[in-house]
Length: 91
Image 1 (cartoon, rainbow, N blue to C red):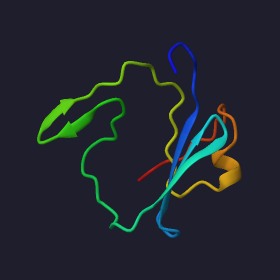
Image 2 (cartoon, helix red, strand yellow; image 1 turned 60 degrees about the vertical axis):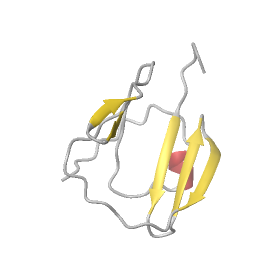
Image 3 (tube, rainbow, N blue to C red; image 1 turned 135 degrees about the vertical axis):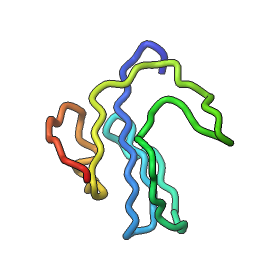
């Protein structure tokens, strides 16, 4: 949405085997996930993708107030508006 702030929340619920996407507080999409967990060895990155050793497909936009959680958010928390200042240390 050009010119508008959007609040997306992605949830990976490994126990339930699904991915959920909330946009501006509403559940927008769900998808079954039957793959295996991965062990990422690099830093988290937003706004570009890495494919065959090269970065590309850069996002033309801005990010603000990014949060990462060590567990799947319950639906009420995932659908809540932005601005939650809770900080969680990830090891």
